Length: 212
Image (cartoon, rainbow, N blue to C red):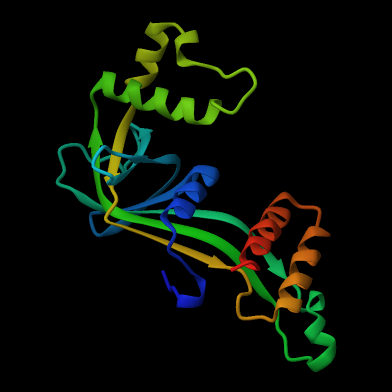
């Protein structure tokens, strides 16, 4: 990922929270000299030694699953709130005219070797973990214990789990950092008028960057 220092996010806690909130990532691997891509929910898990691993699962029929294959390199991409930013929102546009449109966004890339596993009990444990992560904030969370065991085991046999020990994690927060404070505030105000969830979420992130 092209990562100018101005846009680089290095705070690991911020990166982890972004992955948690985004949830759905794009998993890219190599297969026979070509790229395989899947869009799957994944989560970052911290182990006892402090290292991180990315966890997820795929359909057993997905060609991205390579049984008995040596470790393959993987890239998981998470794209957060993003939106077009109009020069009309910058006060500086009326003063100098030296502004252009841009697109602001939040992105996290996770790199490491991908390792698949097929043990049914381990897959069920992973599915339960992923479910708890998504249901925990709900008023009436659903638990896999509510489903019949034979149904859970049957479904688990149709998927494979994977883990990616994290070797490198990168974050890019492109939030108009190069612009004046007045223009950045103008962009925030403009995004809030869009009445779109992604634009509003981006405005919140940009607002936080004004304090840096």
